[in-house]
Image 1: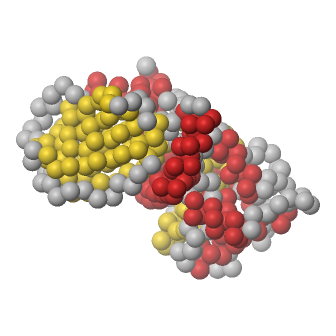
Image 2: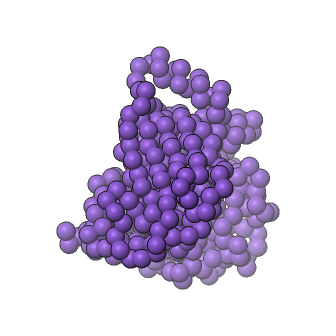
Image 3: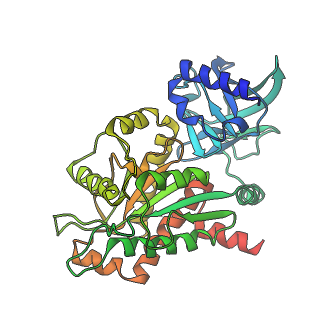
Length: 406
């Protein structure tokens, strides 16, 4: 793509579709743009036509509980909204967003058993992808060639193919040990420093994630050094991260409060506790060297406005899944463990980001756990398996074992 064409495309997108501004990044020149999405009721079902600026890899597949049909576009970004569907007997609703840094997914939730047929063609210099969703009989018979049935479960060969495809694509996770250097973070009554707990836990999580095939986990800091909040988010963007995890173990004046919490970015804090935690974390830049330029509140508000809706949606979905997985692994959680606030470290417009408070150093029971290697490994394993399961599906332990044998 020439510089002139890219500039014209960016200008057109900014004027016509403000919500995708965050999608224009250093990778834009390599991405195709979905310029039209045209749904129409068709033959007792639904037909959806996608128009792209160029050819990209696309696939469709079925999801269960609830039944859905999904379409993945590799290396594509949307430049149009897609929130409503025409009345039809098969599809109840649609949602869409980035599931990795370079994969855009559209999911159709079904009212009744159905099969989806995917076709591609070139037309007038554009690439046309069309999904036709029609009535399915609910049987377990394989769908015809080129179709995916929302009522059939994938067999062993399909599962193996999905594992191989997942292993081929590199998954990049950037882990941020909060605080560091002069910024000690929280300090327990007995003198345990949060910056040390965060670094040791982040290193452990990195090593566990790097044990999975096709996964590259990086740290924003690997020693006791200070890194400004904006730089931490920028490190994730430079790595082209699929996910940014900021690791913390804060302190609060309620000494009885204990358990893990998962935070996402929002303009308004979900509650007073989240507001206080965000204020503690955002104050870290008071340790920045002289001359470091902090973002003003106005700039931060603009960044929030420009945050891509798909990135926000992705972060929210992952945070909800992580809370569920931590609970299944018997990790103690606070009441309402999924919360949100204006954490500056989570502000990257195109990298899904969450902040994990593993516990509170102000609570003596939590402090004992946070200093215990066995417990830290337990929570790091739970986080790592949640990440792998979210991105690649299936049970993370099973996936890891199966890949090791092949």
